[in-house]
Length: 352
Image 1 (cartoon, rainbow, N blue to C red):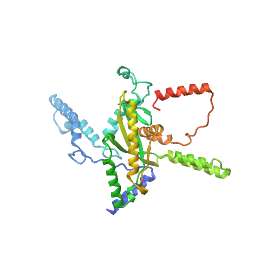
Image 2 (cartoon, one colour; image 1 turned 90 degrees about the horizontal axis):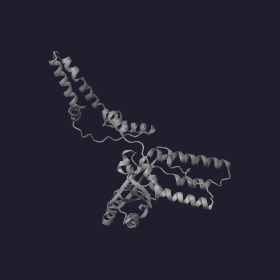
Image 3 (cartoon, rainbow, N blue to C red; image 1 turned 180 degrees about the horizontal axis):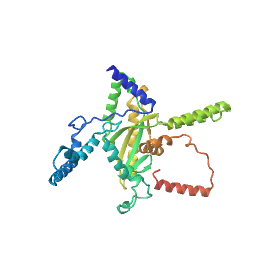
Image 4 (cartoon, helix red, strand yellow; image 1 turned 45 degrees about the vertical axis):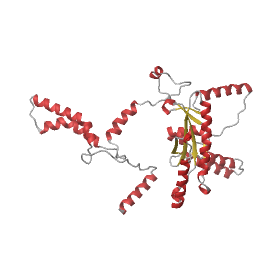
């Protein structure tokens, strides 16, 4: 037992040095005939076995004498296929070779990989036959509007980011108080605010504000060595948030309300009111050093959240405080009017 524990610790440390994690395997609920052969594999391979016996019957009636060698030849395709079904992925033992090498490859080649964004309303059913699927239909999000998602099924969705409390550092009495406070919070929620979704999402660590703070503090540094050190430190901070080794687990409370063309403005106002009430109740749920903080995501933060959920790899590069700094720009009155008009048109036709 001690040997197993030490092996597990050594394996975890080795994977950590390699930048890997060990995926927990789901409980295998499939029924097995033998240690490697499942009932499901037998059922899937039954057509090949039936074809083998039909070929054997045909050869015997054609004049060939029945023998063990002839039986083995006729059933060899079925046995080969059954053997393939018993092979498993080298790392994920609960996934067999046929699934991840054949079925998933076929599904990957057949599925749509390029999604477009069409301006204006959605395409008609006739247009969809000759065009790629719209990205808004794939995501279910029509627009990011007034600090909320507007979904394709006509719902406004508000997202509240909530700070967290590390329960692993608390004693049993403090944990009980926090759980009771959370229970009271759920019981006191008005029925009109339900359903309410609580979600935990791992996102790339965002050091944008910290990078800007360091940049502001060192912008007027006259010492050349200190300026070089500050510049290298900013690059180090930027590399940290672009790497895959550091992530943050953010907690969100999500509220949604359906609407139609007649009550659009009314539903949006009611949702904003409900969000303020829920935010206040969350902040008042715990007191003292365990007090929670809430933040309603704005349009840019909603877009980054959606981007991180769609493309996590590139979302880490997307959070770069260097690209968030803009230089002042002076334009004439006519140019400003043209830019303002094009910006209003872009907000109408685009997600952002």
